[in-house]
Image 1 (cartoon, rainbow, N blue to C red):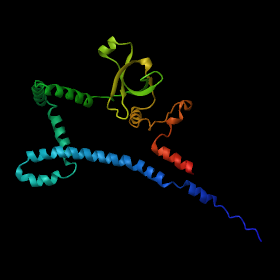
Image 2: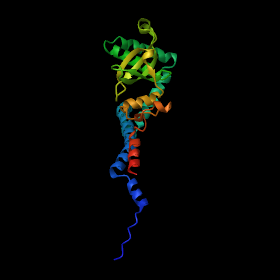
Image 3: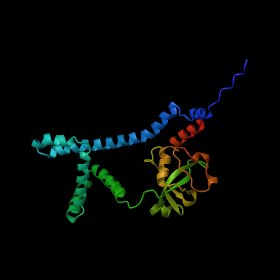
Image 4: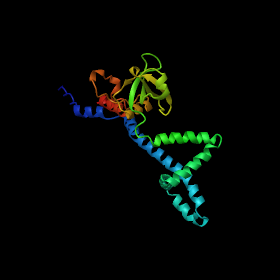
Length: 251
């Protein structure tokens, strides 16, 4: 009986099957691509709808009742309330830029400051908004590494600048003011004054540092310095990079 020839193996076809992404990997890749876009659109739409819900009743209240049917139709347009708010705030800012406007605002501040409790809240909020709006440069200058909460345990913080005022005069020499954020919510944290030699400045930008804090270390920037100082955990830590490595391993 004649020996049957061995079947030929299509190596290219087998390689293509190995490289074909699984259903789970494809779903996760699509989720990584679509989730940031969807969340951004949702947050923007929520903000616009919130401003519209505040401005729309004011528009209907200040317009004559005979105009309400027309104003109802226009007020239903998404984003119209936000546009009206921007225009009103711009006009208000222009009016307060002259002497008459500043005088009226000064009288209003004086009256509000004399009201118990409300005056203290108003003064604090005004100082915060004036600091944020009139600030000429970024609040955080650099990203740094400090030992916290114990020795040989490091965490990311942000340098605000050299310490000034009474704290600089009565504290240690050459203090640096830093902000140690909580993760994943960097809006709260600790205000600290450390000696300069205890603060190690990093090469990453402030934006990259904030991304790392918010992502609890998942999104870590690549280090452009000496490759020998780069740990393997600092490259390709994003979800897309991990999925890409899985696809590459499958191939």
